[in-house]
Length: 42
Image 1 (cartoon, rainbow, N blue to C red):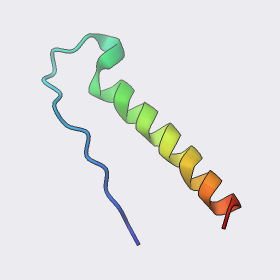
Image 2 (image 1 turned 60 degrees about the vertical axis):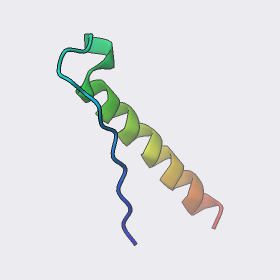
Image 3 (image 1 turned 90 degrees about the vertical axis):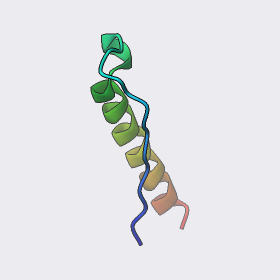
Image 4 (image 1 turned 180 degrees about the vertical axis):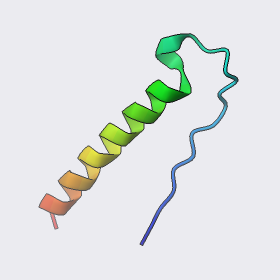
């Protein structure tokens, strides 16, 4: 089963630390951690 997470509202005018790229990296990291945790607790 595949799920999709949408984080929208980026205007392209954000400060660097709040940019789309930074959020994308953060979501990728934390969702990977969540998946690993879920696999361990199956």
